[in-house]
Amino acid sequence: MQYRSLGRSGLVVSEIGYGCASWWGKPRFPEADALGLVHAAIDLGVTFFDTGASYSAGEAEPRLGRALADRDVSRLVIATKAGTFHAGGGRIVRDFSPSAIVASAERSLRHLGVEAISLLQLHGPAIPELTDELLSALEDLKRRGLVRALGVNSFDPAVVEHVLGLAPFDAVMIDYNVLRPEREPLIERAAAAGKGVLAGMALAMGHTGLKVAKIRGPQDLWYAARGLVRHRDEVRRGARFAFLHRQRQMTGSQAALAYVLENAGVSCAVLGTTRMAHLRENAGASGMTLPPDLRAAILRTQGR
Image 1 (cartoon, rainbow, N blue to C red):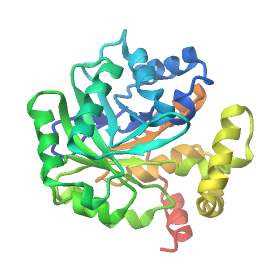
Image 2: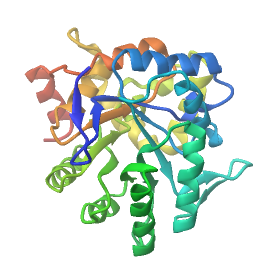
Image 3: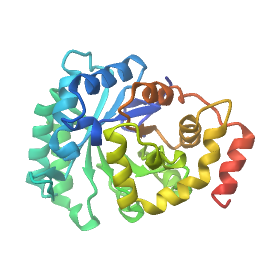
């Protein structure tokens, strides 16, 4: 595993990060399997773990805390999110008031069982919600030693652009993958501003390999339903990149991750999986280089 600086935050992260969310955090996915994946990721050199207060109906954070309970976390960068939380009955509530964000951070500390949150990210805020009062509260969390770095997770380029000009924030998480080459100028500006860039959805939700058509277990049904309902355009565009999965020198997932990590402005490619073989395959993408002919094929398919 290779490592990169998270902007100017002082944090160093593994090139491949593990996302603790979705099916991984749900009680229907066996606890032993979920914890085993985190432990295996650590053994593979993964140091960046990403979760959120609202993920998996509020179950992901406590589960990650249990996974870390008997592990040395001194080298790990544990990231979580605030601003959304699960209110029961399948409802996700948004609240970016300073008091709600502080309370969320304090709950996350208890759930994760850590003394400080390595990276606290606001989860999909709108620009008007980024008030001076909120920024002051976030900086106070840093001063109190409860949070080491601050970030924003948003797939809205206008929000990310705004955040790049706000001094308290150290990092941004955006949707960058082979289906999102238009994010590259934004990544360049983020790097110039000293912000670390986390590539969320680095595998484009598996759409390049038509994951929605490969049903082998209940988690595949869950992901397929979500993809077909919420991301039909990505499923369609992802099919054009099926050639990534016909390479001899690397797997399709490794090729997709190598593309993301080829961008020097990206600190970490974050992905989730509930299968050990996939975890090992994806971790192996760190340090891989795209062959020139494969890079050219990706650019052609992107229309460049």
